[in-house]
Length: 267
Image (cartoon, rainbow, N blue to C red; front, top):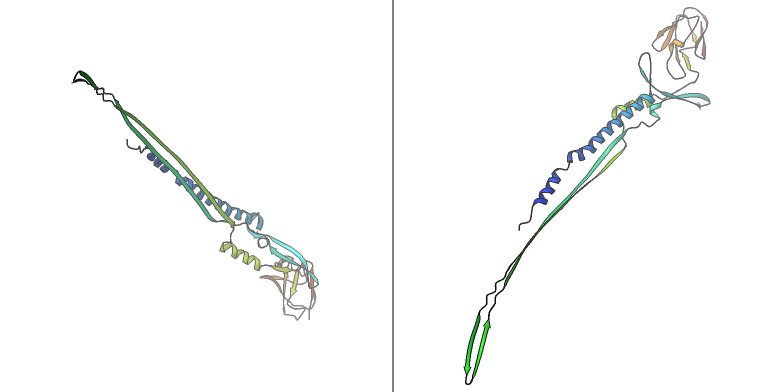
């Protein structure tokens, strides 16, 4: 009897029925979605922590942190962009390892045993007589034949299917994109030490009539603020980050801005 190939066909069908596309593509899709979520988290962090938005104009500006410390015997203020001193979360997936193992075994066995039973009794009686002298002897012969044959057939089939999959995802803090790294570099270069009371400067302390007075002022945040420069006796006009005035009369004048004051003399 031939061995049945039904288990082999069942095992092959089971192997073809394994959803390789979903089992391998599913983890890959999940990693891509996780990477997109990580990028959005980075963007949300920069928006919520590192930037201020003007509610009227919608313009955004970097959040600065001010520190006061002693420098060369006087208190100064250090203005630092917040994004340059806090770690920005930028998680990236470095590698994805997907290990898949499918184990399918099938076996079939067939046992055939033939046995037939046939009984045949064939007998013959033969009697012969022999006379020797005064004696007489009879002989009788009997012959018999027997044949036996049995028949038996059994069949056994079995199969098993097993598959496992191991997934390992490695992720960590990745290097910043070139654009973000450049922004942080520019913010880092903007570090400035300023006076908590502001800084007022003029181009001279003693002038002659007809000279031009140029005054500049930086507030405590280190930003130019020409509109804060005042002088009651002079007509000041803004010229870029400075305030200028043409001196036409002699006398002493006081230039003020914030908490700073400077006296100039025109001769």
